[in-house]
Amino acid sequence: MTLNIKRYGELTRDELYAIVKLRIDVFVVEQSCPYPELDGLDQDAVHVWIEDGGEIQAYLRVMDRGAESEHVSIGRVVATKRRSGLGTRVLKEGIRAAKQYFGADSVYLEAQTYAREFYEKQGFEQISEPFMLDGIEHIKMLKII
Image 1 (tube, rainbow, N blue to C red):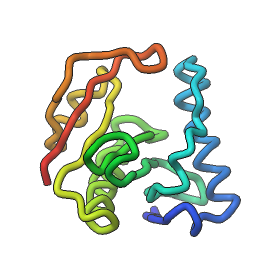
Image 2: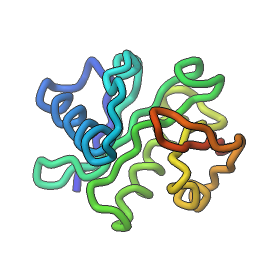
Image 3: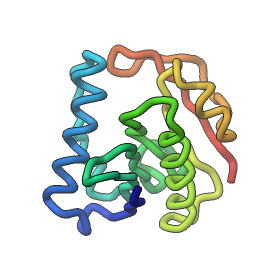
């Protein structure tokens, strides 16, 4: 398995296509949730993914302060094989990238409520009441690093 960390301008067309396809397949199609996947934040994000055999197995993006919150934030976390350790691995790499690229001392994310325990195991704490986002219940979470 190969770890990749790239800014938007470093992505090849094929890498960008594979990232967007995975996100749409999971967040729009699988979850039956039509929402604007292409939200204008990818261009300033750092993209972190793990691939095996040329296929993306896990992905997330890291955004600087001000994109989604006052903190450096992580979003679009996805693993193709759930409960395989890939989500944990990509999340740890995303936190490392948040420090390296944006000097993060904390990391913010908006998690679907069903995934709360996954993020809590990595040290994130719930900082909001549940709220609806694109028809799916979410919570705001923060990890001090």
